[in-house]
Length: 487
Image (cartoon, rainbow, N blue to C red; front, side, top):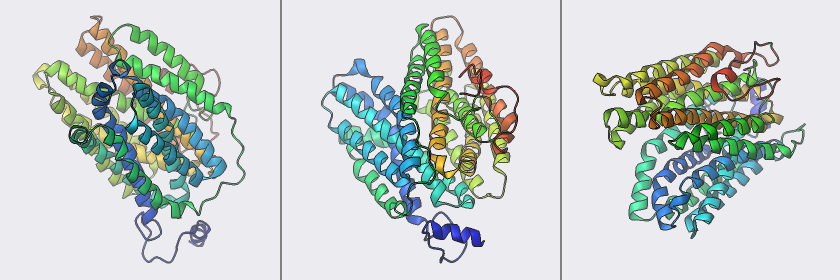
């Protein structure tokens, strides 16, 4: 207890509050409010931009450029994650978060004022850099400002902050675009995100740069750009409905593997016990979920004639399941995180397998409303648990780089899985597969990583440096053919 109090005093946190500490007690409430506002507004921007994009490209006469704003954001965000990790480790979380919010705000301003599509694409790239820095910096702040017992509750709050924009973001963006103008989807965010930063500044002033940091190689940022290009290629392959998607996906995967190797801890692809397993498991969890998340609405519209609104309802059910399970895990900090992680993977695998019922004609797709909620429950248990494990195992002087690897694993494996799903859809569109067969193959390929994640979940809590068998992650996701300890 004395050690805990001393740690709080070292961080400048008031220890005179009565009652057990919470994420909203006097010592933490402004920090928590600021973090949640940043999470909410960045999430809203990511959800809203797809709604505003058709109007924006129409006004800017840029229909032929339609996919570029999305790809520019994605490539730049991977670069921003590495940059944010380096800044957080070398200069401290205050400088990193200030830089991230400033760059993100500059991108919002440029996007809202853009008069040409090329400027708009560049603005989206600037937003991506800022968003990547912010995503990593949030973990660094969480690790420094909150004791380990509070982190499950904090990450539960993060999940809730993502769910609200997922539920209302597209609708609100549509109303703003229709009645005020698409530019205000970007410009209207500026005062809100700056207000969130202002709430955080008092807490951030307490945190200097970590001691004993090794200066990261500047080449990491170029490897990040290369990995980002691979991610964009995989995303583009997933959007095409022809056989060229297969070639693009293969090239993109190769580029991604080359770029990833210097960015993640050695042994990540083999899920080596400890921190490499934490980062690898994050990739498995995100890839399996978001791969099917992209396919499910299309399956309902193609197989059962659902309207776009009805086809999106299972995604809402998944988001609600995610939020509920995240809150439940936050109330049980006494339960081992690896236990919750394994349960999360099991629920995700069950939800994915149950989604195969979408191809049964007589069921009309209705079971997906329940199966995807089950998958969401798995994500709500697994994602916060992995975040807690990351902060427990990452030393303070390397937390920025490790948080960047954590986020990059999420983005890259999601892109791989969405790309694989896109290739299957393209094969069905070309007549090489029946669409139900393509869906069943996707279910099988995505359930595999979830089962592997459940099987190897205990490694995420094992001490780093323990021995491990050969890679399983590579065989399942196709991310790499590792000869050594790289990605």
